Every structure is written in C-alpha cells, then in structure tokens.
Length: 306
Image 1 (tube, helix red, strand yellow):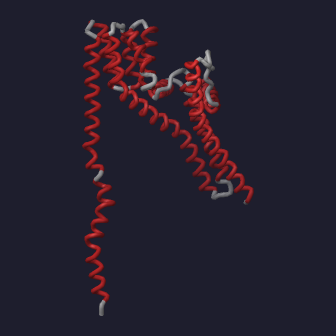
Image 2 (spheres, one colour; image 1 turned 180 degrees about the vertical axis):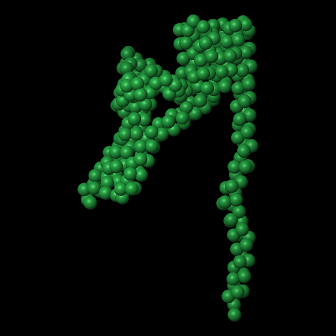
C-alpha cells in the first residue's frame, strides 16, 4: 500500500512539474526574445539568434506530422482544422500538426496518468476515470483553441479602428495600398499584435496573388469577422471604381467606433438584470434579518414566559 501511495505521489509531482514547465517555457522564450530585440537595438547583438520552439511543441509537432502523414485526417476535416487554427491567430503549415499532436498526446497521456493515480482503487471507478481522462484529452485542445480564437477575434476588433486611422494617414500621405498596409502592420506590431499579423498577411498576399481583390477578401475569410469583411469589400470597391481611399476608410473607422460604443451601451444596459439575482441572494436576506429579527426575538421571549 505504501508503494502505491509513493507511486501516485511521484506521478502527481511529475505531472505538475511537466504542466508547470509547459506553461512557463513560452513565457521564458518570450522574455528571451524581448531581451534579444533590446540587445539588437542597443548594438550588443548584431545578428539575433533564430528562435527555437519549446520541446513540448516540437514533440507535438512530430506526433501531428506522423498522424497527417498516415492519412488519418484529410478532406473536409483537415480543411476545417486549418481554418480554425488560422482564425485563432496561428500561421504556418506546422500549426495544424501541433494541434493534432497535442490532441493525440493528451488523449493517450491523460488516461495513463489517471490509471497510475487510481491504482488499487475500485475497478469501476478507475475505468470511469480513465475513460473520462481520454475524453478530456480529446476535447480539451478544441476547447482551448476555441477560446483562443475568440480572444484573437476580440483583440482584432479592439485594434481595427486604430489601424484604419493609420491607413487614413498613410493614404493622405500619398502611399499606395500595398505600402499603406505594410506600414500599418509595422506600426501596430507593439500596440496590437493580432491586427499587425492580419495586415502583414494581407500585405504578403497582395504581393503574391495576381488578383488583389482576392487578397482583400481573404482578410475576412481567415478570421470570420464581419468588420474585416467590410474592410476588404471597401478596399476592393476602391480599387475597382477608383473612389477616394482616405474618405472610405475614415467613414468605415467612424462606423466601427460607433458600433463599439453601441456594444458597450448594450452591456451596460444588461447590468440591472444581471444584478437582480445577487441582490435577491445576498442583500434581501440581510434586510429581512434586520427588520424581522427583533420581532421574532420578541415573540420567542413572550412564548418562553410562563
């Protein structure tokens, strides 16, 4: 029994250490990248070192590439995965492989951890926990990716109006569309990395694709945001009909800021309804206790007298 307890404790410590390492490595790598950029600007490092992915990411990528190479995931499923991963802000051909590898590793690793932690327990409970761990490992990456997609879309929505203001300035300064998009991507890199990444992709497609309207339409298709679709449509109409670019962008930026203000007002209007339940649950009992408490005590005192 003591060996089983020691084994469970060791597995739990290793699992916590692995989870902590997986969470801390991206932060450490980000700090190293920032320090490398600072040293480069100061002239300390004339040539920045190439970035190396953390070992959990490299392991997940290898597993995912093996699964993709086997042909188990293909067709519409692979296309939907690529669309979801791109909408979450991940670029490159290896992003889908990392996602699939993470699902496979969690689906196989969590049941093993659950089996080791429940050694010597009730077999029915142990089988139930192992099956639940397998389902959790299969579903968890999709839940995390969905939340990251929503966070990326919200970040793009927050910074899109500022990016349009920069594009207006670039258009009024006489820059063409491609140069204006590249300039906005460079200037927004520190303020809003999500908007910077989207505009950088648009600038790359404008240079590569023969039809610039297709590159502008892909802007909204990647994230699924209506605001980016409107921006792509506005820029496409400007290229097709020769309308003034700065005036169209200024109008669109004004509309986006107005819509943001309306969303804030709608959230503020929901507060009274949301505060009703906490008021009933926490404030009204205290009021009843203060108002009716002395009367109840008085009645109990009279009833206790002979």
